[in-house]
Image 1 (spheres, helix red, strand yellow):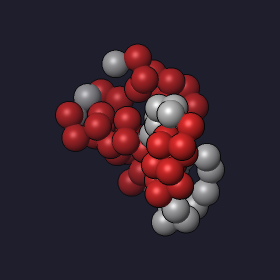
Image 2 (cartoon, helix red, strand yellow):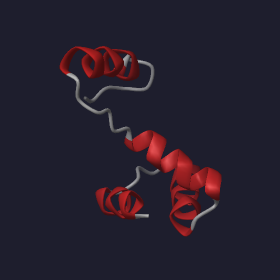
Image 3 (cartoon, helix red, strand yellow):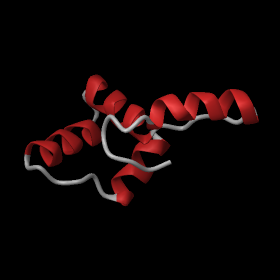
Image 4 (cartoon, rainbow, N blue to C red):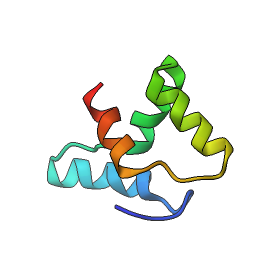
Length: 66
């Protein structure tokens, strides 16, 4: 599901999880977890956010593995 911040992605995802019985995967939650834990990936994400850049797909993929 795609949308701008505050557009209701999380709210709608919860309904879909219940209705379809499928898991919800939130890349935002995964990235915030790395930042909270202070991992190398989290440090890279923080630098990108401070610069106003988007997190690359490659970095998101790496965050999933750790």
